[in-house]
Length: 115
Image (cartoon, rainbow, N blue to C red; front, top):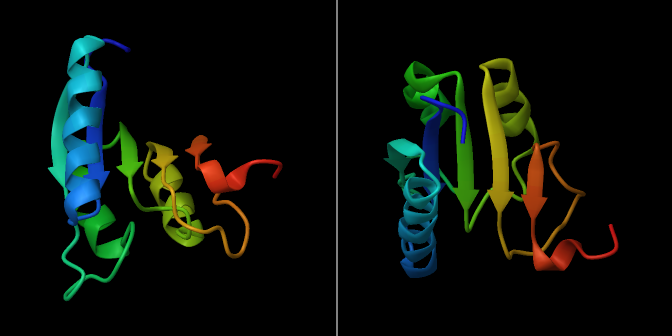
């Protein structure tokens, strides 16, 4: 990892999302990086996935690497907004792909095979 690179772990607030976020944070730390923030959107207030509200809150960490776990596969506009903010995005998800794949820097989704 780049020296002093800020990493944001952005996960779904359900069991697999929180578990994946903890694991992702440990991977970052074991690779010599540091987690600047963990973020879990409140579905009742913000909705599901990477949200504009969250990006506004996380702007203070830019430039940064945002690792989205258990969500993000449907966040086309938000990934573009993050890029304009100086946030590199990795999406690690397992949900169905409906309308293509967002223009994240890296996308990992087993349902994206052959795309």
